[in-house]
Image 1: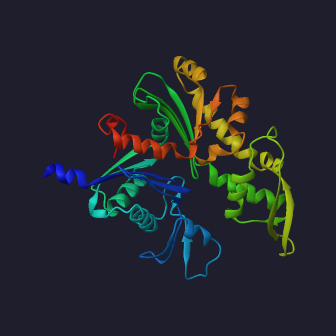
Image 2: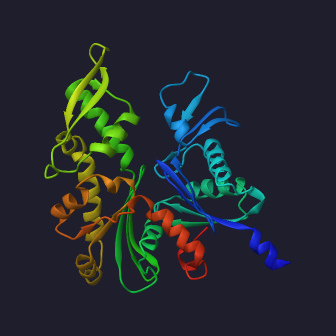
Image 3: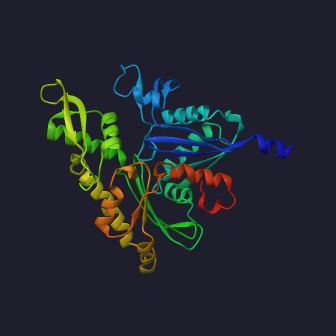
Length: 337
């Protein structure tokens, strides 16, 4: 009988990001990969979730709230965050009474209050047991690195709300540095740049889209032109412009500088022997923000250390939760509650 119940209960891994949420279901695969956005009339009356809710941003009347419950990598709106987690689990096609445990990736700089909010939301969604894992640790596991071994690695996970920098060795984080500057701040910087330079008002969704499609970190990337529509901030009249991707290094320069300085600060705190190993092995960029074209090459030029970005940078944390679920006893030392 015990074996029967063990078989029917299932475990989930969740990358609960400020921008996107990815849900892995044991023995089923990745079941959800959608924006962390929810639309509702009242907290208990959810209208839309994920992509559908994101399409509603900036388009609804006052009776409908469209929000991102996550801010800086943690739950900012507890009620909406709980409903969002419940909704994504429902989309995973797992009845809540069959959920055994959930592993959730969180920023390494998470506070005890923020930690409790994540745990209680997962429990409200039906989890009997909730385990947390630092996102840089999950990303390293997702990359197939031996985090319990003696070979150190440095992960820079650039998400929507936070950039997590961590040096991992012997199953723990030797040094971590979490800054609340990441993809969202890039979007805001793009909005400000167009308003100040071209007197063109664009929304957050548009800023994110052009960042993903045309954004570059430095001028060595080939030039590309793209059309952009917005409102003239002086006349209020809709206007369309043809823009060069060469504006992005100017728009994003301050954000990239802050991230680079945080990396240098972390390196400066390392013991000399560990720093020597990392200089040889290099730094690995993960997360959605790492997909900015040329960012890895630009940081490499600035700090003179090898910098790489895996093809699955966006999914490293989610892939890490999958691997932990497949071998929970082995990875038990890296989990916490």
